[in-house]
Image 1 (cartoon, rainbow, N blue to C red):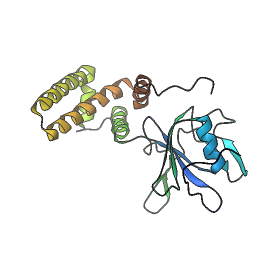
Image 2 (image 1 turned 90 degrees about the vertical axis):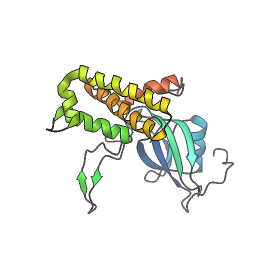
Image 3 (image 1 turned 120 degrees about the vertical axis):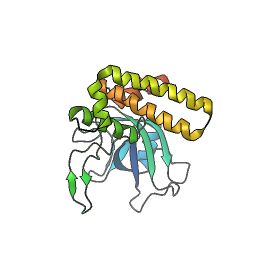
Image 4 (image 1 turned 60 degrees about the horizontal axis):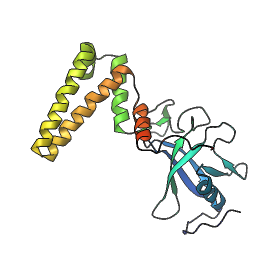
Length: 222
């Protein structure tokens, strides 16, 4: 048995607690699992996610057979000390189906599966905007501002990026928060247009930022 945890953690009557796994780069919820005290201690010691399998009644490391391991970046525990959040770097798809995350089926208001292959649970608002941009490129719509930009080609998109960057500079010099927020939002949108034009994903950008901040990359020897 691993060394007992120092901080008080509230396991349930089965000696387990739920663990939410989140991609450390974009916040996507990858999966939900359960840990007992030994799994928590093993995860902390190895910096790789371990769970307690309720069906197999044993400790297991995520990805021990597939190779799709979860490398721990940070761990958090909630205010009641009965749920853990793990920010992790996945080495491949997390879901056993081969999907990046386990949450990809949308439910409708009647509680039925309305869309079995939705990716909209992944990432945040920037990913959602980029998905819309990509959809407009693939299926142009009359009257759509995004579609009009794509019709104008790369030069029109880049011209808007330059214009919006100038507006951000002016807003910053003016010092008014609401104007800065408005103009930065415009600049972010048109920058996402550039990504959509070149079919570059936000995950590519996040990974580059991760490398620059020294937290990306799998640990040597793990």
